[in-house]
Length: 172
Image 1 (cartoon, helix red, strand yellow):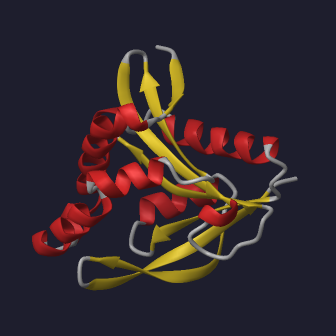
Image 2 (tube, rainbow, N blue to C red):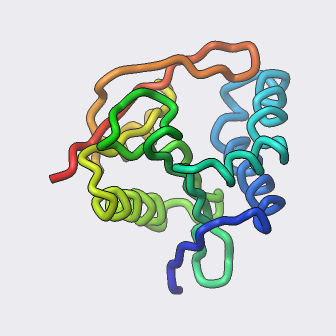
């Protein structure tokens, strides 16, 4: 099957909301209370919030297709859209999610490679992301991709304050 990326626009809002809720729930439901998870989903995937994110300068969403099937998505930020002050020479991968049926096919690597390619094309020297401290599989994946832990920040799942590790990769 051919793997392709499609830049998302406002016409993709419903699909973006659906895949966002599906993949976030798959990743984090077992580790959080239903109330905290639902509070986060209601806030993060509210159509108005997503519409605003889609139109924010410096933020870009991409759908990942495996053949004709929507397999995952990625959001990255640059410049004023960064969620942490990491400098003008950095690109943030804010979201990277693969649908359950498409995991373990190399699609996460494909997305990270594309993010690196985009960062280099924009003259960025650093790529970074936040990953939940207890998501050991994701941490191991990012380490395998050359990322190192360089800090941490708070992430709120509803009312529950959690810690995300900040992982960075310098681009040569």
